[in-house]
Length: 383
Ligand code: FNR
Image (cartoon, rainbow, N blue to C red; front, side, top):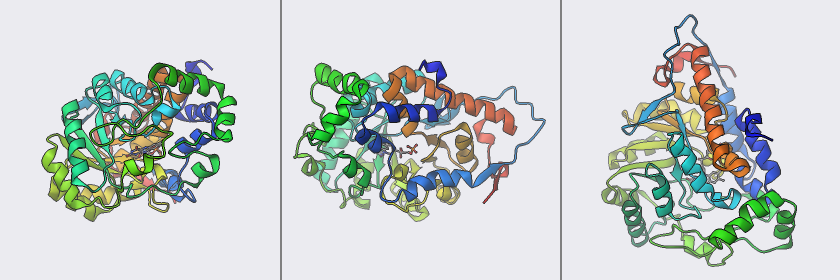
């Protein structure tokens, strides 16, 4: 369908489900084990309703929000999503260029299949997200490489101590390294839009995809058995490593995947600049609560540092609820990648426009003129 026919983020997610081979769609959309955390991200929003105010002159309303000294056009950004370029042609590049065009933040993933230097060139405002093993000898070169590329914001993801148990990936035949099985060929053959539009086009123009951002250099290709080893054990990553990164990285440092207020206090003492409260889109510890539930308590102890939320945001009203609970900013994952999958950069720009228009309309309907006017007085718990 024509882009104008996409009316909500859900439309992009439905289209991506048709477009992608089952194993890749399972990776994009799926959660972990029983999907408790994935579902909690939606449940947590459903538990709040609005109490709008009336007769508020809302003609001066706008969706702009400032974060780390920069004013963004919309109150949301695009979070890191690994292997995006396997699902959408040049996925991370498409996402970062759309974010740049629309003036919203985008975080590139450590597990990107595109070189971090290339992302930084395409969007000098992009943030870098790191996965790191607990080994200083592997942390230091990566941090130095990120600095040299010009990144001003470094996000350390702290909820991937080990790979999680994504049963659906195993059932569907999606493994890293990718194994050239009959299933893989069959799913490719039955999804020609993806096979020709993403896979063969990538091979033709850029060659076999590699994890390009491991340590100081390139990792092995996605079909390689070396991969597990190259990723390194991350279960040794601990507080001293965060201190090490803090000393080495001069820009803004955030931790992503924090849920406990005490961890926020400790990270603040080390000198981080902000927090991303998240259960990783329900993809890591099954049963980890939605970050939305922890938001008010974390904001209380964050001492004015920005507390950012992600997980399950699909509507402008979700963005508003997160801000009303104290979020300084939010990020929206799967729908943005889905838009890149089905329509590339114009698709992502359309998705951004749709969500921004929803927020702009909802501000008038709730009786406010800016995101920072939202607070808990607009909400009531409904279940
Ligand atoms: C992710 N996420 C993620 N997070 C991270 O820190 N590094 C990463 O490489 C990835 N990779 C990744 C891949 C895919 C396909 C998805 C869907 C997610 C988590 C992501 O940054 C974010 O926390 C969630 O996606 C937010 O939830 P929603 O908006 O997708 O519901």
